[in-house]
Length: 164
Length: 111
Image (cartoon, rainbow over all chains, first blue to last red; front, top):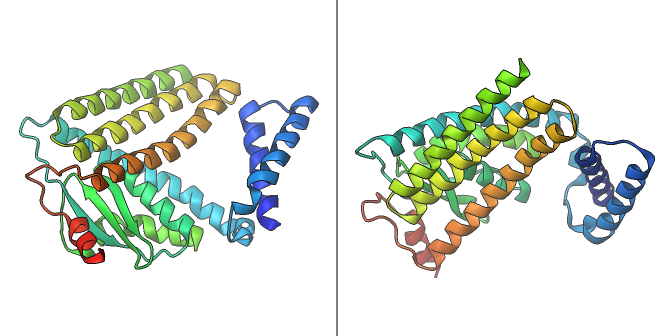
């Protein structure tokens, strides 16, 4: 039930942002659409709906956005340099990294962040043991622990506060 | 003032888009190409969208551009992951100069 309420509120907020118009008819349509969606999909939305009430998680998420943006920009410039360099100094390979995150959403977010950061792309995931297989355009270390330190650690610290 | 920021952001975005396209042409195998194709282009498109947001401000168009960034980030990551995983499982080879392939070793152990 809690999961459905959270889903309903999120759907309604998304609708009002998309339409950006708080007239009565718009809100009525939004309520109708959100209710229908909640009825169909709400039950499978979240396993831990209580987490949505804790404010600190949102603050950590706000902190995560600039950190992630900066990392993304740096990595983008790195890949751009490698692409434009006449000799193409690339060194690709698939490495294995370990993650401490347990929740499904957390692992999904981590894998997505790794994929979005240029130079790395998540290929497969082993949620039982907490391993991710990452294709890097420039492999710095083939060792599991060291690769974890380079690729995962920065995001993981913040994501632990958001999703665990 | 906002207009100038918008033009700068759009230009930066377009530069990254072009870099992504060059990468797509120059890199050797599917995996590295996907890196360039999805990632540089994601940042480029985000730049263009941010430019649109600065141009219109908190208006219908601007907010929609911001939401587009949000959706783009989610779908680009999921899409490229799905592509690369499908390619790997259907036996697409890595570039011959690739350094290591940890996934292959583990898949052999698992099966």
